Image 1 (cartoon, one colour):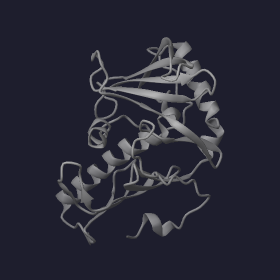
Image 2 (cartoon, one colour):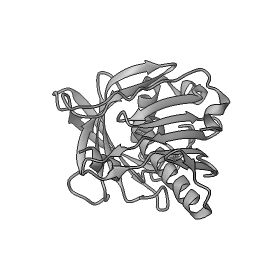
Image 3 (tube, one colour):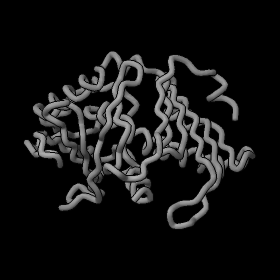
Length: 253
């Protein structure tokens, strides 16, 4: 399952903007209103804008340190093996997600070849796009280029009432604008508690449907800490929202 999740989200749109983006004509006003309500339940726009440093491990593996105000990130992919046995090389990327400029290390040695470094930076950017969407998608619901549609009322798996939003993307947005998502907003918590992923907007069935669960407070915002079904082996994401971090974290290996 986890290998599928890596592939499916490697090119999700991620616009590094606050969620006060312009209302696009293609979006449903009722859906946009619900999206703003979700974000208020997560702490609100001011809290999100003021949150500068965030840290997490994607499914307990890839480590991210992100300065949201500057766009600087530190991403460490430790050596290991994929579920199919393919070896994974130790990679460290220090870059700015806006400029895509930075440095790359493989197995402790800096990559000096220009073409190899650029490929490593592009790979690092895709990791950040993918992994940060898993963490912060509900704060990105009304970013420019996102089209929202109110689908209607649907029950959550435990029978509680919910409302469903559909997310699609304008052409040219992100790596794969053909993706589609459905997100379930719980009627009692006001939070997203489930999502479905469709690789193609026209697909009749999702590739998977998974929870957003065990919401917790981190600083002034709330984030989901579980993204697999209850009982599945999901490593600690080690989420943190520190008030400050050493500048060297983004500058030196």
